[in-house]
Amino acid sequence: MKKTAIAALVSAAFLTAAIPAKAQTVSDNEIRIGVLTDLSGIYSAIEGPGAVLAAQMAARDFGGQVLGR
Image 1: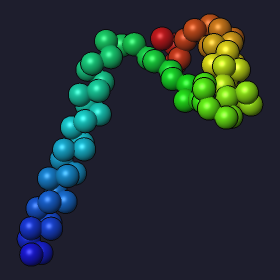
Image 2: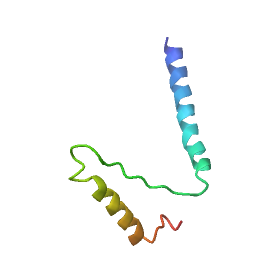
Image 3: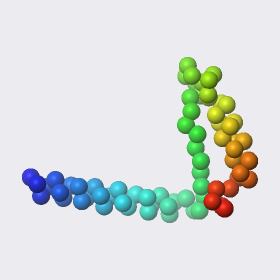
Image 4: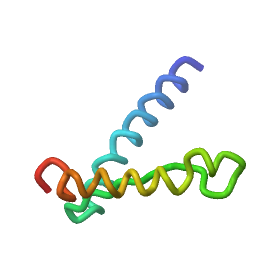
């Protein structure tokens, strides 16, 4: 039982370690920034499209670059 639990933890560690390496190769040196906001629910008037606009304005303020890219 103890060996099975250790083997499962080691397997999970190796699998999760491989995920970021794969994600880095997919992006083609492109950085995407997402905004998670409510666009249609009851709180959309409070945040909603204004949060998306604020993120776009912030990107323009920084010249459309993240870490020099």
